[in-house]
Image (tube, rainbow, N blue to C red; front, side):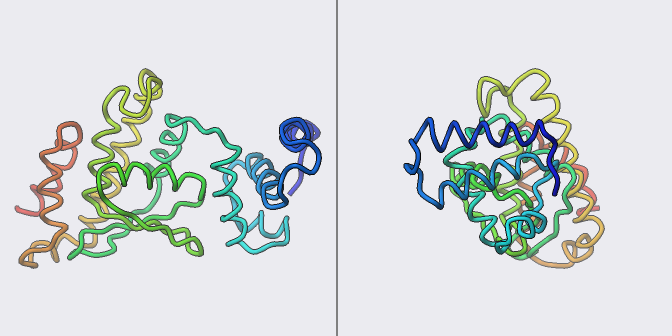
Length: 228
């Protein structure tokens, strides 16, 4: 991992600001300093890569992820619209796997552990749960929860006052791609099973999803194909 002079200056300036100006020399705990340095270096990557960071800092990947999670809270100052723009970009390209037809759960990989807390917060707001397995970077959640969140995100100002204009237009494009990715996975691997099973939860979830105000029409073709 190599850094340009400009990157080195950015990293050094922020360390001086946080470690010296904000806390006073020695006022920051070692774990917080570790989190800060790691976070600053990770931000210089095009995409956060825990394996590369692990090799660079000579600590385990699990430690890397824990420190990044801590940094997300203490130093990142990420705005809701920025976090969700990133998450929707992930949703638009990631491969969703059907974890369970009976439970109606899906699984996907989230390489950036700093984004998980934003997803978890929104999941809690709709009274649901999700899990993040750090070693495999796999998030598992109920498909109905994911659909409901995407439906919320479709609306202007649903995340913040900045959730509008070009930001919202890009978000809608990524939501359409995410819904399409999920639909393709179900059509390709689970369609016949859904038709044969008596009462799989995934089937009832898809039926419910067609009634969602904003994205229901995107899911309706999949539901119709299951019942054809």
